[in-house]
Structures are given as structure tokens and as C-alpha cells.
Amino acid sequence: MDDSPTQQAQQGLSYTDNLIGTLLAIFGSVIVSISLSVQKYSHVKLAGTKGQRTFNQTKTWWSGFVFICVGEGANFVSYAFAPIAVVAPLNAVSILTSSILGFLFLREKYKAKDFAKNHGLAFLGYVVIIGGTYLFVSFGPNSHEKLQAENIVKHIVGWPVLLYLLLEIIAFCLLLYFYKQHSANYLVIILLLVALLGSVTVITVKAVSGMLLFTLEGSMQLNYPIFSVMFVCMVASVIFQARFLSQACNLHDPSLAACVNYIFSTVSAVVAGAIFYLEFQNEDVLHICMFLLGSAFCFLGVFLVTKHRKNAKIFEPYVTMDMANGVPTIHDNGLVVQPDFNGSFSYGALVNNDGVAPATLPVNLEQPAVTVRGTNAPPGQPNLKTE
Image 1: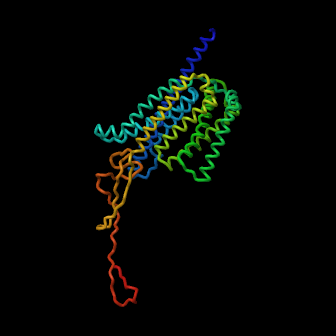
Image 2 (image 1 turned 180 degrees about the vertical axis):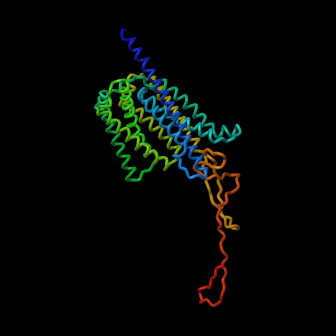
Image 3 (image 1 turned 45 degrees about the horizontal axis):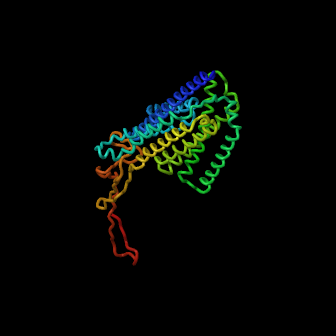
């Protein structure tokens, strides 16, 4: 009974930390999505001009870069306040924001029936993501631990964490062996590598951000060797994770890769937080089930949103030869899926849609006439002269 006021105060502080971390993660995800759209607009605008400037010479691109730094910084700090199980699924907010921005950039006009047919699943995905986010944030783990250097070392030397790391290293080596030696460029294999690296990333990011927060509060943590180890592992895992993810997007459909990567990375992050930081240790069955339900809703919502992107038909050119004039023409059977600025350039594809006159290549392919003159040529070797 005497401890109840103290426990209530600690619980209230935990809810406050959860709220701060959640808001920071949502803010960071939204800012990162906006910044990527700003940088994309910079590339589109630059490609539509005749100047020789590169993208890093434009103010628009640099403003997007600054926004990316701000957004990623907010995501980094959020791990110091909220559990991994709450922050990691919030990446769905970034996918939702990117989809909405892409939809606004399309500026297509539809009838009500056509609009529901083409964008109904996407809007259903938005609703499902918002509902799932509310569930897993409300019922997510609320236990917080002071991430001092001593506590982190205690977690690492515990047998559950050592067993988890051993299994993860073995799985990573096996997947990497098949990927490198047997050219197994399957999407699942590449994204499993990304997810395994991602679990290391969230563990180290939470440790580094927590120790930095303690340092700012006056308790120096940067002189402990564990801080250097976690920082190096964090940087290395982020770099290799980005490389594998880039390869997955180059080899496979980017929308499908985004959906599968979100599911794999979220599951691996939640499991890593549960094992390394014991985030679900004091949670009851009801809260765990509602958290899992909210996460499942987010998975479904992301699938619906990315499925809409995948079904959009991209530019499919085909070339025909007008034999009368000897001039090739380019046609397009696809739809514009990228923002079309000023109606003259579509990012990532040539511009020529159905209903538009075929684009004639500005080249002169007229063939010179060939005539035969002379009757003194040896047999089997005609005397040819070109006019």
C-alpha cells in the first residue's frame, strides 16, 4: 500500500515517455516522407530544364536534405523514450504519408465510380493503418528501463540475449552464403538479411540514444567501452542494411519490397526488443493480444496501400517503323504513375501517353538510292554505284 503512490508516479512517467517517443516517431516519419518528395520534385524540375546544374546545386534538394536530417534525428531520439515495440511499427506512418503525397501529385481527374475503383483499396489501407496505429500505441508495452552502460552490459551477457545473437548470426551467415555463392536473389532472402540487420540497428540505436540522453542529464556514459561498441555496430548495420535494401528495390518491384520489408523489419524489431530489453515482461495477455492485433492491421494496411501502387501500369514503350518515311515512332500503352509537372516531363519515364500524337525522333533516316550501272563487271560481281 505504501508503494502504490510511487508506482503510480512511475507509471505516469512511463506513459509520458511513451507519448513523447510516439509523437517524435510520427513527426520524424512524416518529415522524412515530405523531404523525399521535395527532393524528388527537385530532380523532376531539374530534369525538365536545359541547364547543366546537378541536383546538389539546387536549394530545393538541400532543403529536402535538411528535412531528412531533422526527421531521422527525431526518429533516433524517439527510441530513448518509447520502447522498440512501439516505435518500430510506426514506420507505417511514413508509407501512409508517402502514398498520400504521391496521390496528390498525380492530379488525376476521375469520375466517382472510376475513383473508387482505382483508389478505393488505398483509402481503405489508410483507415486500417490509422486504426492499427491507435491499437498498438495504446496497448503497447509501457515498461521503461534506465539505459545506463551497466544495464546494457547486463543484458548482453545474459544467456537469452547470447542465444538470440548466436541464432541471428547463424541465420545471417546462411542467408548471405546462398545470396552470394548461389546467386539466390530472391526478395525474401534479401529482405530477411535486411530484417536481421535491422534488429541489430534498433537494439544499438536504443542503447546509444539512451546513453546520450543520460549524458545530457548529467550522468556521463560516453566513456564506457559499451558505448563505442554499440555506436560502431549501429553505423555498420545501417550502412549494410541500406545496401541490401537498395539491391532489393533494384531487382524487384519497389512497392512489393516496401511492403515485405515493413513486415519483416517490424517483426524482427519487436522480437529484438522483447528479448534484449524485456519490453513485454510485465504486460498481461490482453495488452499483448491487442498490440498484435494493431500490428496485424498495420501490416494489412501497408499491403493495401502498396498493392495499389503495384497495380498501377507503368510506361511501356514500343517502337514502330513507318516504312513510308523511314522514321521510327514511340508509343505508350501505360499510365503516368509519377508526378507530371507542367505536363511536359514525367519523372523516371519518357512522356508520351495514349491519346497523344506519336513522338517522332528528330533524325533523318532516309536511305540513298542504289542503282546498277555498267555491263563490264565479271560474272557474279555486279558493278554497283551509289548515287
